[in-house]
Image (cartoon, rainbow, N blue to C red):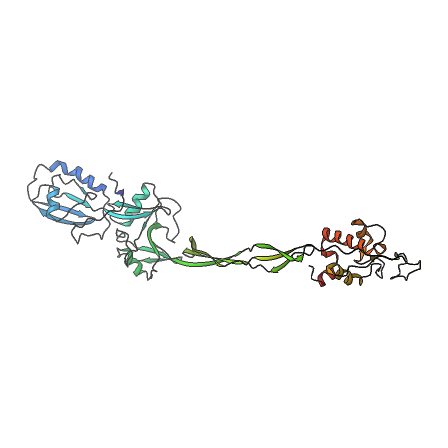
Length: 421
């Protein structure tokens, strides 16, 4: 049996065929040409040169012609039929003809088929879309015909089957067009469908409700399937983190906490994608623009590098033994504890916490001295006895140890008030 399909690279269609050769009726499959050849042999030598009537079938359009020709080639020439290398004729051009013989011509056409993933161009001598699909299905190929949208009218390269209605599946519904239309664009128009510029048109065998056939090669209805295609742009934004930069400041004491001089701001990256929607579902997405539309602003921190001078030693003068006044109920304070720091952050903190008094004890008896240590905290930084009985210098020393270990948060109210955190 002749295979009516040949896969090819794109090729031009011949231009030397008669302008009006018909393609309006479903024809006998090409195997019929081979059967006609078998009948021809017996009478060929009897009347090769006699007048005879021959049935000429060109792509399913059959007409009787009278001829004195003795060969198929001569009959074709008399009827202005010129064959390309891909076209077929049965019997062969060299075969003789006799009265009542059948001469079958099938022109090759280039069609585009797809299996849903790969699209290919093939040449076929099938006369209509149904025969193309049937033949491909018989070979185990589950494909459909893809219509060209290069012109205003969708074309598939072969006609639709004659004498039977054609379904149009579009927008989720089936519309049935009665028999009598041979071209895809005629069927689409008869169904009242307006095609969008990007809509895709294909011809396939589907079930009567427009669903895919459950079995490959199963009986189906020739259906013009229309996919609505829309291309939209979708924009998304992504925040970009900022960097944190720490700068040194030689005018700021190194025992002060690092402070934020400039708040950081996140940047924005804008991505634009071109999205292809087929019947409302996303088919593909491609990035067409990706740029930073707002640069991030770095956070700037400042760390002091200036060394704070050591506090001056406290000079003490022996005093007569007298019982000092109690401070907030404490009678165990030393006679002379020295003075609190007179300047700088520690002086300000002492003034805020205790009024600058080394021996002060809180009214509840829990917090002692310049920096209002609890006894437990005092001991945790190496102190002994009660903080309120230690010298101002000792209290300052232990306070610095505590700050280095735990930060200014140990004095939450006053450190916040002084802008230390």
